[in-house]
Amino acid sequence: MAEKNELASLARYAAKMFKLMSSLKSRHGIEFDEILIFFALGRLNFDQQPGGLMFVKPANIVSLSDFLEIPRETLRRKLLRLEEKELVQRTSYGFVIKDVSTWRRIGELAQPVEVDA
Image (cartoon, rainbow, N blue to C red; front, side, top):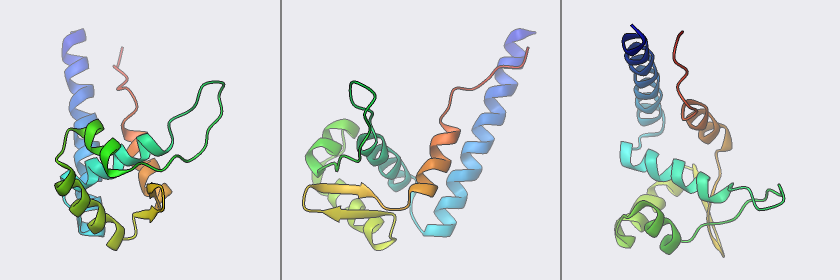
């Protein structure tokens, strides 16, 4: 019975994630791999530092390419598309999330799945 509840909970989570990704795809005209890049960029931008300090840390193409294991040229093209869509912004130190509210919505769904008791 617990396994059925766990699978049902996971299926609901997958449905919510797919709905959000489809919504982002249609609203912003971006592909699923670009959504993944957008989410990963935020992960690198907002990673909390030791001691609890938090600041925005731009990510360059090399660090993002290493993190996602995506070829640099592919990543560069995708980041330029995300920049055109005004989701990310290029700085002299790398790229940062520009549309934090959209990134936050993805992050809320990335929280651990709670299994019904």
